Length: 184
Ligand SMILES: [Zn+2]
Image 1 (cartoon, rainbow, N blue to C red):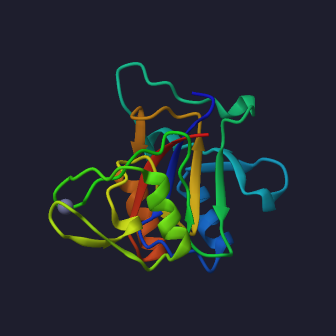
Image 2: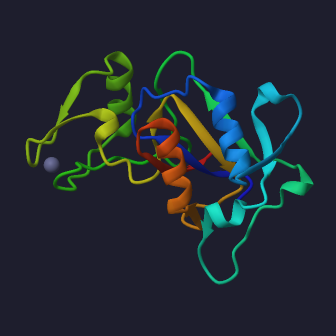
């Protein structure tokens, strides 16, 4: 699980907080993040005191990363100045139509289409539903966003953000948040 991450992103792919310190303060007060690791501007933090309440671990013997080891187990924030990015990793897979579950083939080609023109609509060949490419169902293995909160060393399907955390992020940002799993 060394190279596996749980990543939280705003559903509004253009959203990037205007006031980054206020977001970090908010998440520090809620106990998601603890002390900064290294330079504050690197946006890397130890887990806070309420980490295991705000991230729900599944299964009977949850594997909670140990941020005291400082070996990569930490929470990182990335803010993109240049707008929304494709955030997928090695585990990115072909997306589905959000309406009929038709599976598109060749996600690399779909990604290229988005990079060439990120306003391009894609039409489902099965049900004719039209959607922007980030609006396809990427099956919790990719997102498109302008910022991300990365929780390192979480394997796919073993943990997810608690409702209280998603609500907190929504309250701060004014938009819904989702999550996905990434292998790097
Ligand atoms: Zn469809």
